[in-house]
Image 1 (cartoon, helix red, strand yellow):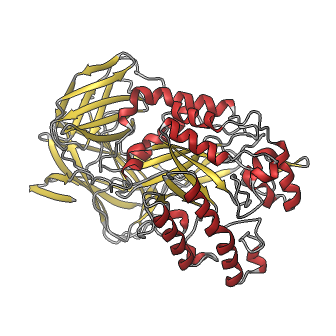
Image 2: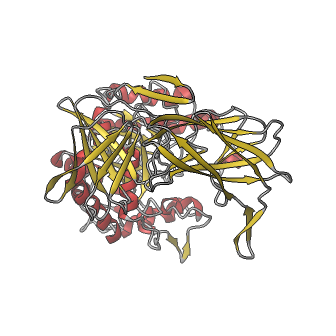
Image 3: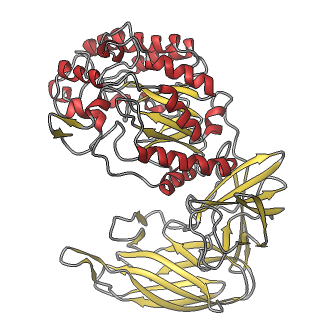
Length: 598
């Protein structure tokens, strides 16, 4: 719920946005939205191939090792021989559970059947399963379920329902060329999908979630809505508390869906009220790849987790064990690092959500929050320790009772000042954590927010950009950063842009503009605030060499527009206006406002 109140005082605008507290999760999904961090395990016959087949690496482009049977055109029979490479004397699923627990994870989802059609458990439905192919009496799913129960980790199953390279009527993408009859595909569905799901739902205790893997809506595939409804009914009947993800092929709003799964390694960009998660890789491949060299850093993984929680999402981080069950050293190190961080800072993740401020508005890091004993705690995750030791927080109108830094020896009190929606926190010289430091603000009641204002930069000024604009004509197109040109508004007609800015103290402020004029003639513009205006003719800005001998792009020029005087602290509306008859295109990048006294 938002209520915007605007007080016009001449040209001065005071704007307050009141936000209700984020709604509590449904009882069924509360464990999921409290957990925030889980483990994905991709493990199967492909783990023994290690991304190589007869001396040849994976074909085509994505280097996902679990796709090797399809991409390298391996026969079912030859692919099955990979089971002989599994070292059952070393495989111990409890070690995966202990690693997840050490990393601070609260749930595990394992690939019970991936696209290759091989069941990890001793399925009575199909002999094409790891137990029978390996000639062992072991059931990895049973062992994992027992270990999860023993150590208090919730268990979920990934199950590839749409794609199956084993069953003659399962879908593989080559059927885009040959086609398949609906009645034949349904034979696969009734002979394999439904019976195997029934096995998983009845033989392994409480199942926390089913993670299906259709990365598009069912209506773009061979799957029918009634088949998905059949799956949902089966799960609801046998395990009513089991969660179902949106990649079953249904929209997140469908009653058969409990949480949204974004695309692979697709992270949040806006605050989303319903439960959602990102499944992401710790390196590049999901299944074990012997040539892997794209390991993500601990900082990158922590920031992915924090970023999602700040937008009300979870992070499910994948490991790909080898055929002997071992996890690569690089992955173990990162999980241990994350676990140590969470052992100290976990209160800022578990049970947290985000504030409904503009996503990513603070250039120093991200914000999470939760309510404890009727106090609202706001956690400031500082990725970049400010050089001047002042942490600038924008958009919270409430005054905190206290500010503290989480350190290895406990919480350390910090001094702070409050000026309208701007909070300045005095930091010590050194960061408290080598990865991400956390500052805790405590408020006596739910905070009041202004989600529209331009945030204050770490450098003390205000960047009025294409993404934090308050109002703009609907005809102005937003063009995102494309690797060469910054995110910009395409101004190709007459119109006005407006921003809400809180000026912290009276005085003179410098105003600079960054733009690209794509036309052959100068374009007249003006900036207006509180009865003052700055005018300039923006000359054509031409081209710049981005990379010598290879890349040329639009030049974005910086120009000084002049000074504005703000008679007192408060909210102001700053407007940018193009001259009458402007045809453009003019690419608007930013206005930068800074106090000349600083």
